[in-house]
Length: 444
Image (cartoon, rainbow, N blue to C red; front, side, top):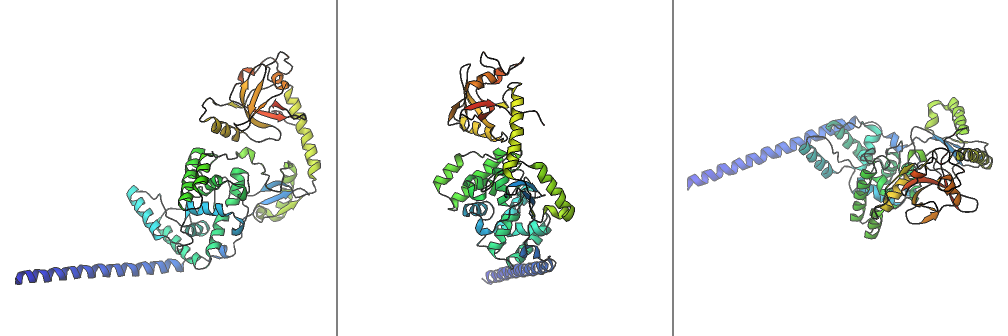
C-alpha cells in the first residue's frame, strides 16, 4: 500500500515537473517572440507612402474636345476612391483574397499556420497565408522573396498599418495598387486592359476573373492562359456564392459564360464611357516628347493631362479618307482568304468556339470579325455571335471568286479556303447590307 502511494506521489511530481517545464518553455518562447517582434517593429520604415498615398498615374494626351488620343507610362493605372468601386467588385476581391478582412486585425494566424503546415508537408515555400493588409505591406515596403524573416517583417508591418489606417483606407490602397498583369495596376486599370470596360460595366464573372489575378497574375492571365483563368474564375464565383455575395442563379449564369478578354492588339486605346477612340498617334507622340523635355522621367508618373488643338471631326475625316482609299486599293487584288478556320461542327461547343475565335480577332472600325456558317456559289452566310446569321451581298460572291464574274480574283483564287468555320471580316455597306472584306496589307 505504501509502495502504491509512493509511486503515485512520484508520478504526480513528475507530471507537475513536466507541466512546469512546458509552461516555463511556453512563457520563455512568448517572451523571446515579443522581444524579436519588438526589435523588428522598431526597424520598420515609416508608412508615409500609405498615409499620403500618391499612385503613379500615366501621361494622357487628349484632343481639343477631351477625347483620349494617347497614354504613356510604365504602369496602367486609374485611381478610384473606395466608394467609386462597385460592391460586386469589392466582394469578388474579398472572396478571392481575404473574406475575413473586416473582422481580423490584419494578421490571420490560422491562415499563416495552415500555410506553414502545407509548406512543411510539401517541402517548399509555396503558400504564404497573407491577408490583404499583409499584401499591402509587402507591395509597398518589402521584397517578394519567400523567407520566414520576410514573413515576420510582413506581419509586423501589417500590425503597424492596421494601427494607423482604417480598414477602408487599407482596402482602397490595395484595390488601386496591386499588380494584375499586362502592366495593369489596380482593378480599374485591369478592367480596361483585359475587358475594355469601366469597373461598373463588368459582369460578375469578369470581376471574378480579375479578382483571381493577385495570387499569380501571369498564371491566371485570361489573355495568355484562358483555361487556367476560367478555373480560377470558377473558384472565385464559388467562394462568392458560399459567402452569400451572389445568388445561385447568378452563379449558374456566370459559370456558363466564357471569358472573352481583349487581345493586346485591340488595346491601342480603349474607349470608355463618355469617350471615343480617336486615331492621332503621331500627334500624341509629339506631345509626349514636348512634355518629356520639361518633366523628364516624371512625365510618366505625375498624372499629367495634355490637351492638344486637334479637332476630332477633322482628324476623323483625314483618317477615314486615308483608310477608305487603302481598303479600296487592297480590294483590287482579291480576297486573300480567311484569317483562320475553326471547327463548329459540335453543337455542344459551337457557341463557345465561335465566341472565343471572334474574341481573338483584333478590332478594326467597320471590319467586323465573323465566322462563316454556310457557303455556296449562290450564297454566303456568317455570324457575329453564334446565335444570329446574316446573308452577305452578291458582291461578296464575286470578291471571294465564287461567282462567274471573276472581277476581283486574279490567278490564284482563295475560294477553296472560304469554308464553314472560316474567320473573316465583314463590312456594312451604305445600303445596310453586309459584304465580305479584309484588313489591308498595304501601308501609306
